[in-house]
Amino acid sequence: MTKTSHVSRKWTAAFAIAILLPALIFFIMWSSIGIRFSGMSDNDKMDTYLGYFPSWLQNINMIHIISLICCVLAILLASRSFKKHLLSIRVLMLMTSLVAIFIILFDIFQMI
Image (cartoon, rainbow, N blue to C red; front, side, top):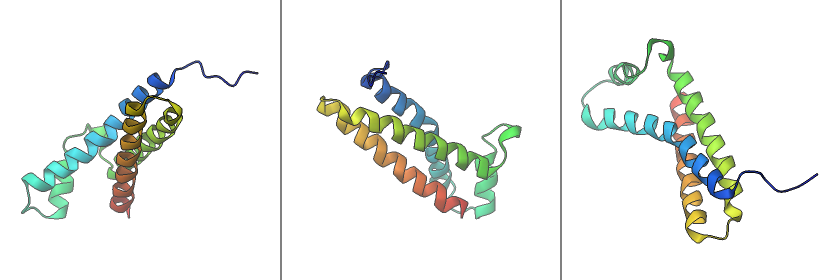
């Protein structure tokens, strides 16, 4: 049994960033609604946010769960790339992990 991975750590780092993108886009969409429409009530902001999604994804908790799953997967993939000797990849994976943790905290706060 071998302990080497068939996927290089550079590809794992790229996958981590690609998996984090949907959660980051969800967070940016929510933040942009708060910035553009500052005078709206919370219910109106929620309706505006859910209006961006198709009819089968009109549940806010489902959107947050998808975001949480993407963030956890991104952290797991990023942690595999920390062993890479290139400093740029290590720093990029650290930033990926920090952004994912921030989005996880945001999602948990929004679900409560």
